[in-house]
Length: 354
Image (tube, rainbow, N blue to C red):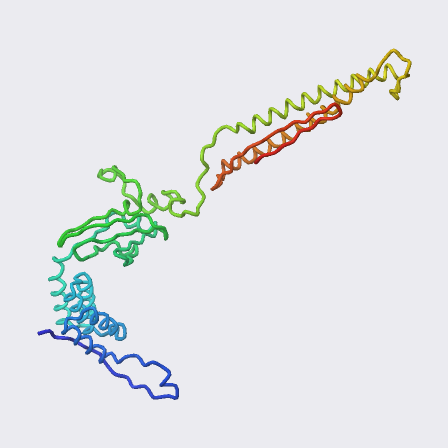
């Protein structure tokens, strides 16, 4: 015969008001409790256990309702929940001086313990607190400060997920038998490399300082954090373009000298105004064409050289910056140089991605 305890239940009747018909009144905890017990007697635990749990929320000091909730969980087959509730009642009853109830709850918890499996989190607690480790077992969160105590679970499959500073680090499914103990190293939960030296008794003890979050790259914890600069190769295209610029400027200087030489010859033969007499034996057309062509090439080649050197300089700056802060998405760099020449002028066209 089941004995139910219900301590501290009381019914409060509030004065009626003009708006009483518009406000839903909370259920009477005693009526709710009696309905839950009736559902338990009928074997309807899916209905009974949530009702009793609501009563415990309405009357947080009512140990009788908590004891009945533990019984409901046990009869429903949720032994781990029943065990945790019996332990809670045992502690609270002892603190309130209710020795008989404390002993009964302790005996019920002791009877359930061999039927449960255990999950133990092994490793330095400083490591868990340093990473703000939070573990979820079947969706129920366990904060880092609570990881020192073993967790009792029902036999069977369980999903364990670990988070560090809010970022998921690992997840696994484990199968536990009744009476078995499953150990889960904190380092494995954090996806940290194992240390063989930890098994050596002479190895130094891991502390919060030696196992702080700085021991693991910040980008491994935070996907939005920037990674350190990756090694990048030699800036090939920047060097090539810079070399082309120097050669072009050198060629431009050569064409300028040729243009000056043609102009000098014209001045010698035709005077400062370079207006040659028509009956002269000297024909200035060839030197005029050479002067104009060389001057145009001088402008084109020096412009090409200046633009190439500028492009190379910008490329070197971006290459150096990319070494320090590599972009998340890279764009292929390309450069197309198209010189243009004619008897009267010269030039160059740049296109591409820089």
